[in-house]
Image (cartoon, rainbow, N blue to C red; front, side, top):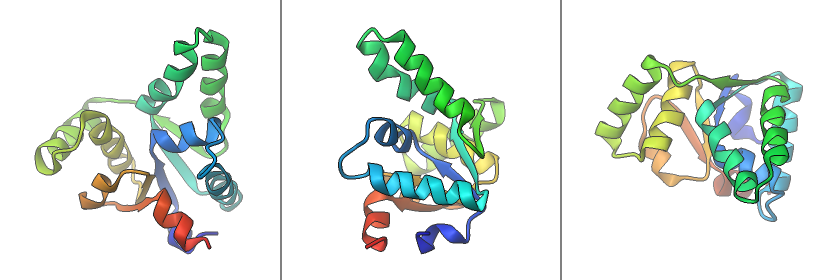
Length: 149
């Protein structure tokens, strides 16, 4: 496994991880598939926000594919060791503090707050802005791709 991930037992995954995985992104799909498989094998607890569900369903719905959107939802619902986190008052309050302190966009603040409220020690995304948030380690896919060589 990528060394940067091994010491973490609860990992937050940004929406882009699922989008790249589903869409078989030419640069990131193999890395993500390997990362997810290793997390499943290690029984790492994976977290993603309910907001990620919204974000991954947009592309198929733009193409008028309600069935495709449903398949994406099933993927997240049935993915081993994955919890979809509700956007509750604790998450919203934490997100507001993150936005105020770090000037994050609302979706990023909600996703990060979801992970922080639910005990994630690592967040994986492809957004360098997440590096400035304290209280959770962050790795970008580009960084992990470099470490995995």
